[in-house]
Amino acid sequence: VTSATAYEAVRLADAGFDDILIANETVNVVALDALVDAARSAHLTVAVDSQVQVELLQAQVAAADVRVDVLIDVDVGFHRCGVRPGSPELPAVGRAVMRSSHLNLVGLMAYEGHAMQEADPAVRRRLVATATRLIGAERRRMRDLGLPCSVVSGAGTGTFELAVEAGVLTEAQIGSYVLMDRSYAAMGLPFEPALWCLATVISRRSPGEAVLDAGLKSLSGEQGLPGSEIDGVEIIELNDEHSIVRVAADRALTIGDVVPLIPGHVDPTMNLHDSVFAIDAQGEVESWPIDGRRSTLPA
Ligand SMILES: Cc1ncc(COP(=O)(O)O)c(C=O)c1O
Image (cartoon, rainbow, N blue to C red; front, side):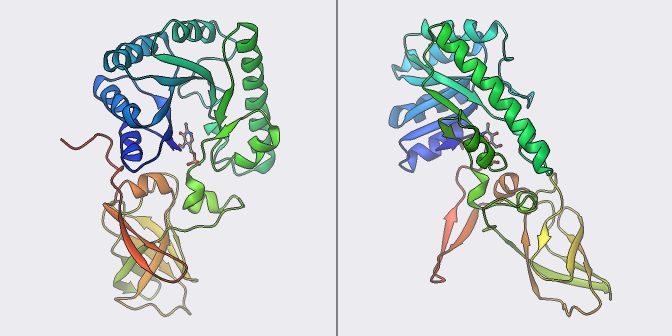
């Protein structure tokens, strides 16, 4: 299972997951402490993209006498973290890992985040093809350098199908597919939305408009507005605590009505809530805490 932070990895390990990838660079000392914590009870793989990070990581895990597997993160076009393809950084980082007594080099990470939300399928395919070519070449370079590379990890919900078809990855890091969101739902992917925020109509200030009691503190808006599950009801604006809604002339909507909303972006939306209600196929409801949501562990 993939986590974005060492803190999430601790939560996942506490919950019984025994094979966890932190698909992110962990550097600060508090985060490295959390990483060590997770590594005490789970098999942990972590991403690195610099010698500095390798040294910090090695010092912390060696002091605790725990071992972790390591992937070298390669920038295949997203331009976030990752060594540049073809650069001298890859062998330098690889050799630094090989010199580290408590780190075990297992391969490469190639997250093609720049293709993830690309709406045009032809462009998305082209971006994934380029990323595949780049990571394929880096994998060959690893082998030529005598560096181990049995794992190539990448992909997200938006690129999963194309990445599998391309055939270079040995594992996928996809996560949003479980719940989906409005931006992914618009892309025609083979997954269904399973997360709604129930908002209540609190005002009908005009025949064509209504106001709901859920805004930016309940639904993230940075990847577009939430979608409404009721025909003729469309979110047009998000304020802190309110959604402004356009209501079709033939749609009856009164104060107190509930409007299920599909978040624009699932990850930061989940992070805004303490718990989620899980409903099974028989309609049984359970409340699940979202205890991995904080970016740091509680004191
Ligand atoms: C490095 C990395 N891997 C995997 C994912 C999962 O992508 P998704 O949630 O779109 O499936 C993300 C999401 O942000 C990510 O940053």
